Image 1 (cartoon, rainbow, N blue to C red):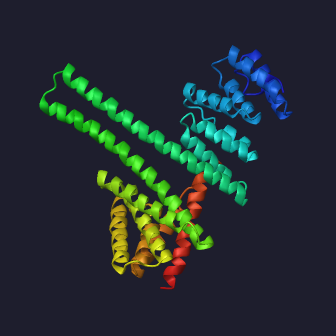
Image 2: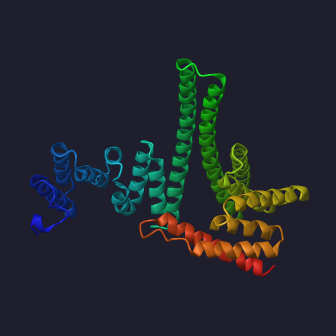
Image 3: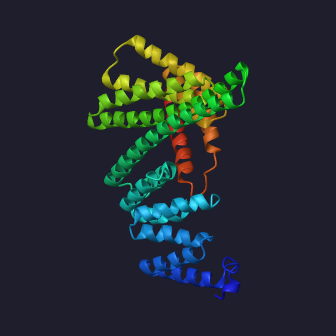
Length: 363
């Protein structure tokens, strides 16, 4: 096709588009090292065009130079914040899961934790074999731990930076006592928000691990102790979150979910105390009611409320919230073909709601 007839190439300099078409042709023929040379020449001579940098990201991933690929990936994000290279690497990662795991770690080493975890989630739906899923779960767990350390370091840096700025401003501008108090209060608010986010993230991680270990116990009769430890850690994290901000609907929601998981744990190990079970049920109801007041039209909140009231033997409320939650879940957008996470979340909520409705109808 003549260049002038291709609307996507017509605006490019002639030499650049010649190299681009040649490099892309090399990629199709799997002549990756020839393509590498062409993409490198493109970035040297035309550094302002994304195509060369994207080509280097993709070709280095294909030749298993994961750190180099991640470097170019990061560079693209930094120089072109409106350009998202993520969708261009997903097909390559899905075709080579072990390589995709190594690339995810390379992204994590550059603080691109969310992209790394999203890639691993994409991979989970490709090959359901147990060995692959175990590899992906281990990788996700390790990257989540790295992310937690990163967030904790950010929190400390934020505290030092903001407190230093506050003191400096107070001296330079001779702020009065009231102004100084307001400035410090602003810093404390910012620190508290970051601490809140970190507590919720760590809590979700502990809750996920606890639930997984509980399922291991039900199937293989192992890991019950680890399940209990992680669920109790999750409870502490979410309690900390709502103590920082009682209007955090996520904090209340996940605290209610954690109490439900702790109830399952009690039944699995043998109930230690009827009073403790009553406490779990009361706390779960208190927190889900708080979440409902803050987010009354959230599908997850309503389906969790249905589970809480099911366990509290309140059939009317359980049915009411389950019906509403299912209706909201079915109305959720699918997220499109490329948004695997949105599709999974919608399916999870619908499956959970329908299973719960079946149990409610038998009460």
